[in-house]
Image (tube, rainbow, N blue to C red; front, side, top):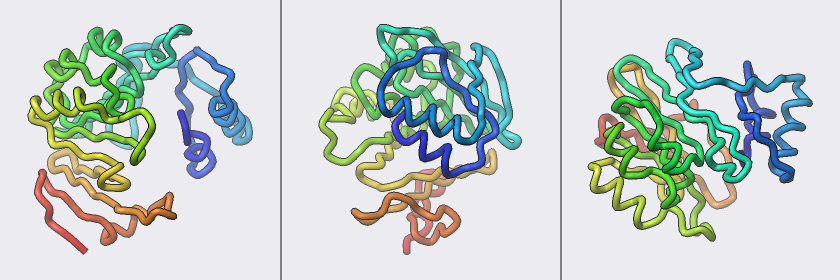
Length: 212
């Protein structure tokens, strides 16, 4: 949940979904303060709950209360828009992935920054993703993404995109075609104006179609 307080502070928020599990870290406290400052309330979803994001439909596939391993408390959500679908697993590990009732999915937001404990072969066999997006810090201390995870993704035939190599990654779709826009930020930049797409490299169905 690192950085979630900045998201809450920067955007108009309709509803907050979080598991019941709590912790006493500064990061978690920052999120609770951001929620309180906007007079928002937390909703604890249930497996099978559905909601819309615009005209896209999202479904909750997992939400646990595991005080031993907080990673497995991650809310897992699958979003479908037209012919395209997206799976967000948070930091959930293989024990959660193996129990997911999930269909083939176009885009996988790779679990836990590419840790070896997530993005199991079991999950990849289920969803057969075409694209794998890894959100990970450059030269991080954890060695993410791991060689094991990258090999599993490569063997599964995924087109892999990494924020440590490509900068901020934005995906857009009309429900039929999919575009990946990459923003290579300077060392001192932390945000990007997503409306100015000419700063990025556009990828259309896996092929570069624009470079600035």
